[in-house]
Image 1 (cartoon, one colour):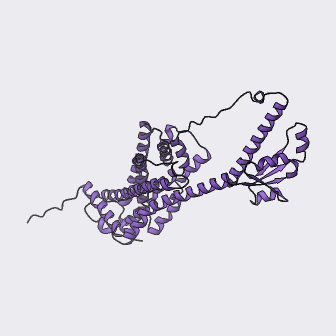
Image 2: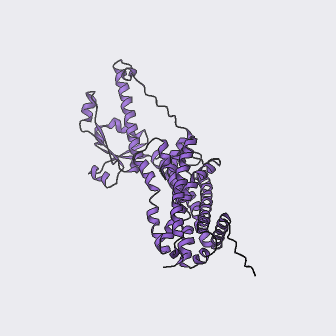
Image 3: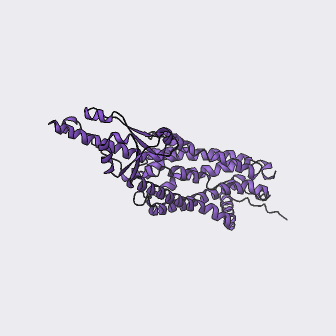
Length: 400
C-alpha cells in the first residue's frame, strides 16, 4: 500500500493562515482589544480638547483681563502711571523685595521706575524704566510682552509730541519704516500648532501593537502553545511573517481610528477650532508614511520577543523603546534644521519631517518617498532576517 506524502502548505498560504489565526485570537479577547484599539483614539481627542481649553483660557485670561502690574517707584512717574491705567493696566504697590517675588513666582512681571526718572524726563533725556521678569517661566511671557508693547507705544507717543513741540515732524526721527509681511500660510501655521503630532503618531505606530507582538511570541511560548504551531509543516519564516502581518494590520487600524479621532478633536477643541484642521485627504497620506514605522516596530518587537525568555523580560525593553522616537523630536527642538534629502534616510527623523511637510501642505517629492521607503523597508527586512534565524532555534518553543 503506497503511502501518501503530506503536502507542505504554501508559504503565503501559511502566512495568511497564521495572520488570520492571530487576529481572531485577539478579537476574542475583547477587553484587551478594547484597551489596545481604543486607547489612542480616546486619548488623542482628549489631549487636543484639553490643550485647546488651556490655550483658550490662558489667552483670554492673560490678554483680555486687566493686568495687575506691581510698580517700584510708582510716585516717580505719575503721567506714565495714569497712561497705563487707560490701557487696561492696574498699577499696584510692589513687594518689598521685587527680585525675591519674581524668584518665588509670586509675580510674573514688576516695573521698576528709576529715582532719576522725573529729573531725566524734565531734561529731555531717556528716562529709565526696568522690567523685572524671569525668562525661564513660560507663563510670564504674555504679561511681559504686554508691558513691553505698552512702554514702547508710550515712548513713541511722547517722543512724537516732543518733536512737534520743537517744530520738527516726527517722521524725521523715523527714516526707515519696517513693515513685516508674514508669508506663512494657514497650513504652515497649523503645522506649528501641531508640532506634537509627529511624535504622537510615530510613538503610536512604533509601539501601538506592542502587546500583541509580545503576546503572540513570548506569550505563546509561556502558554506552551507556540511549540505545536512550530511543529506544523509550515515554514517558520511564514509563521513569523504571519504574526508580523497581523500586528502591522492591527497597528495601522489603530492609527486610522486615532487620526479620525484627532480630526474630530480639532473640530471641537475650544482653542484650536477653526484654526487647525486635519483634512480627510491628509489622513491616507499620513497612513502611508506610517507603514514603514509600524512594520519596523512589529519586526523589532518580534525579534526581541524571540530572543527573551519571558513576557516580563520582553516588556522590560518597552521603556527603552519608548525613548527612541523622542530622539529626533528633541533634536529638532534644540536645533531646528531645514529639510535635506539625507534626513529621509534616518529612521524616525524621516517620518517626523515627512509628517510636518504633509501637515504644512508642502509637497513631498518622489526622491524623498523613495529614500524613505527604501531605507525603512530595508531596515525592517534586516530585522526580519535576524528574527527568522531566531525562529529556527529549537529552544524557541521551550518555556523558561
